[in-house]
Length: 372
Ligand SMILES: Cc1cc2nc3c(=O)[nH]c(=O)nc-3n(C[C@H](O)[C@H](O)[C@H](O)COP(=O)(O)OP(=O)(O)OC[C@H]3O[C@@H](n4cnc5c(N)ncnc54)[C@H](O)[C@@H]3O)c2cc1C
Image 1 (tube, rainbow, N blue to C red):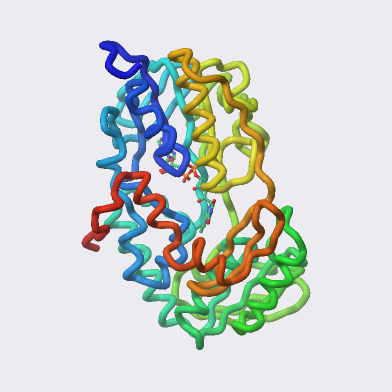
Image 2: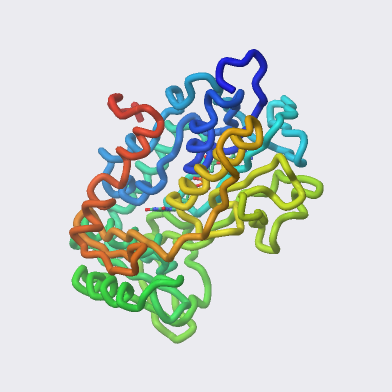
């Protein structure tokens, strides 16, 4: 299609891990508009490192300016999408040939941030760093991947700090992972002196808000008393699909995810694709969103131009890369192997995969610094 006078139009809603990859792959094949309220791509894989290491923080925000050579990034928010019309918060309405839904998920701060201005997000992460630095004991509520990774980051940055992970589940790291992985993570948590209160919920949440530096005492239903100076909520992912309307809204599951067929189209909608955390077809992972982006882009090119062939998405094997600070951690690889701390450090722990995403945004040669 490239070079033709009138190109079919594609609107990609959401410029996260899925959206940037689809938009970039379609640039030149269609007139692409990427709709995103944030002023920069947020590389939230690095969010927990950014809390503990302020010089890392600015690198988490990657400007969209170089992503598309032909298409446009529109700084706006979709407020209504019914499968045919896209309505934005500014009042602008579009009726593109194809709609791609990639609005991802929200998660309590600091794992994700809902700030739309980089400067405001940097101030918020900076405040969390300062409060954490002054806390003697930290309670992390939730011992899934986020709570574990955050515990490892805090322990690596402030070795003297007391950290306790609290979860109503009996065991750390829910999910389809090998018990050998939990054993290895538990071994490293113990070596770092990170405490655990597992197997019973708190009788009530702490009085102070999450992230506030203010001493509190809580008790689990099993009677364990925990005194800490600050706490963070490390659970509560929520797919962002509330702007969907009509039959598109009806395609959501009870917990708000969007049903898709194996070609990543919403059932009954020939021109609406969905991918990443909102799609009810695989786990919530940036790597999954990236693989799905290739399928979505290939299918849209095939649909619009007849080029290539239709592609189907196959859900992934259980995979996780779980750093505990820059040099620790473990993970489960696609072949089922349990990864060593050295391997995790190399794959993720050292640079938190920043370079990979800077390259996708065509920023590999640009120094990434934002004034706070
Ligand atoms: C702390 C942490 C560490 C992680 N580490 C890893 C890891 O190492 N490897 C891995 O594979 N995964 C990791 N993940 C998971 C990964 O971050 C998510 O799976 C990924 O963000 C999903 O990408 P997405 O494109 O679907 O959505 P998102 O990245 O959530 O992006 C969605 C975008 O849509 C925008 N948006 C929302 N609503 C609207 C709207 N109405 N209109 C327009 N735009 C909208 C948002 O502003 C956002 O930019 C981690 C997650 C966390 C929280």
